[in-house]
Image (cartoon, rainbow, N blue to C red; front, top):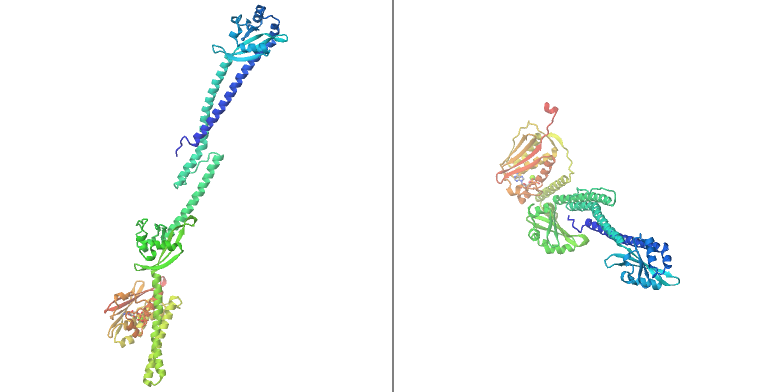
Length: 605
Ligand code: ATP
Ligand code: MG
């Protein structure tokens, strides 16, 4: 901070200086004049009393001024020779008849004295005083007293000349004394003024310094409080304000970082642009969605290259225009993803538009789910429609009559099997719905999974035998592996998996069933050498209604819900179900389930 001559400190010193200077000058002029006037008036009074009160005028009025000059001179010499002033007696003809200054006696008063005041006193009778200067430059006071001659005009004058040199010298000395005093006072004033001004301005400078630091974000320095006066109070208040400001700034900073964290970690993409199209903020999610690197710098004119090209609806001009009319929403597809966009303007102070906030949501998954839901409804309707159409057609034919009993039986069988099929489908759908809504009643108990698996193999053996398939249980039936299961649901899973293998394996094929205990897990494998599943379908066979060969599966009375239900059941048991398959070579389904291990007494046994 610069402290030039214009600073408050120097201005204060200058003001003090001028005040003291003016005061001293006024006082000295006034006092010097008073002293001089006093000296002059007391001198005049002295002379007045010498001339008047001594009875000089009376005595002189008794003399004849022309003839008694010697006697007058004697009178003067006798009574007034000691006076410092020069006393002369002048007659009406302006001749000096006697004088304490012998050199003047006999001379013409007009030549040595001021003739003007003598003639004035002689004509008016009033005494006169006049200050003048001699030819040598000596200041003198001339006093002229009329010597009365009864009622008529004065017959002469007493002319007194007093030397004013002393008075003048005193005045000059006094003046130089005043000048010296003034200089001293000014020096003291400057020093004291400087100290005082420093005392006043220093805390202000400290405040200024602190404010300067505060403007750079440093709130640590406090202004020292040295007194309890106005300046001390200013410092206290300032420190208080700084504390409050610090706290407020802290709060704002906290809010800011909170907001930044929210923006950073929010799942939706957020982009803020100005009304000129400059990108002022783009959060991490938005970068990820648009494939922009986290560290990549985004230039001021990057809108078109980063965002504008994604969809015609995102062109800058269109976005700016639409945002003025309020919130705008739309969806668009880009790079295999579906995005929902919402944007609206944001205002700065005074409600003037400052820019546009664009919110991007990756709704690909949601869209997929919605699509799946739509497909599901379509599938259900379709699956029901086919058997219903068959039932209706056969029923109508029967109702028309004229069908022989054998054909009637056959038709009724078909109607029955279609009804069964619909029944199965509805049952499966209901079960899925219960599983989805967590409404399936579970009866989970510890049970031996090996015996359950043997039972299922046993149940499926005749069906496999119909296709001349060998269904081989390759595990030891004596082994016991305890698993917490709902027996009925798990049986449903095993039957579904084995029946799939039977269904999708040609006549004479082989289906092996393994049960391998692997640590705290039991893996049940159903391995067939059937038709296999193409790679592209492998990932989808657990989806509802998904069948590799729809027509063929449907002909076999399959709806494509079996694996979806099985997967959900296994997962409810904290297990997993996996498939590996090779087209034309066979398929292996693996169900893994956690084994119950009893710690404590059972283990020690
Ligand atoms: P559902 O079980 O409802 O009667 P589905 O057997 O067709 O009908 P899923 O059990 O869910 O349905 O099986 C889905 C699809 O996976 C089947 O349609 C079939 O194409 C394929 N698949 C399942 N298991 C095998 C397997 N062992 N070999 C070949 N393909 C299989
Ligand atoms: Mg099946």
